Image (cartoon, rainbow over all chains, first blue to last red; front, side, top):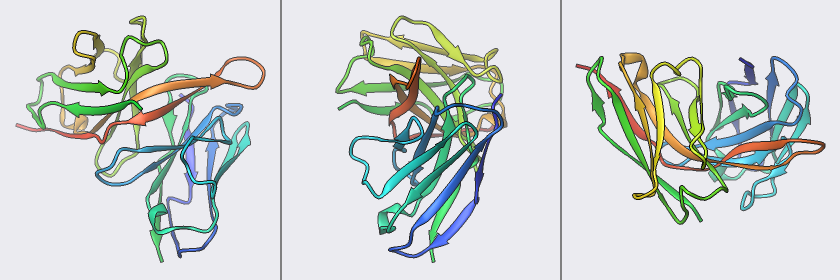
Length: 107
Length: 127
């Protein structure tokens, strides 16, 4: 199985800050990397697919980059609704696997 | 816009079969535009992909669960289902259904991603 490692596991930031979350794959996955946002009691939300393609309806302050083994999710100018948990997921090969998550909290 | 809703018992006894249903609205389980997918999140842990079924009925399961998992589609009810046999406390989790879509990748192949999710259902395995 391909292991996905996210960092940091938690992050405190303020409204207006720029934050970056990193995801590393245990082997090269090309650009087969997706990012999701989870909030308690709500349906998870796809943010980015194919490492850098913004899902329709997702604010442009979210962006993804990377290829091979190293990827980043950047949120510029944090808004109150951005405080949530974020997961990366590889779809290069099954079993599809997720990172352990990054909890983004208000400072 | 496709919407998904999980349903099923919130409490399952150990050794019994955990059975959940995902009702699809705004789309058809018979369409070729999506695969139909299950994921779970145990308490205080990350997400685990369980498996999917395609519009043609072919399945792809996580090998860690393959011996106990069955995903099926009921086109008459526009639903797809998850059955996990011989449940144990380790199967306690929030279970999500989700659609899998794909887009052409640079070069060859496709990018697969889970574009629509249900809100999840909490299932506890306990006597």
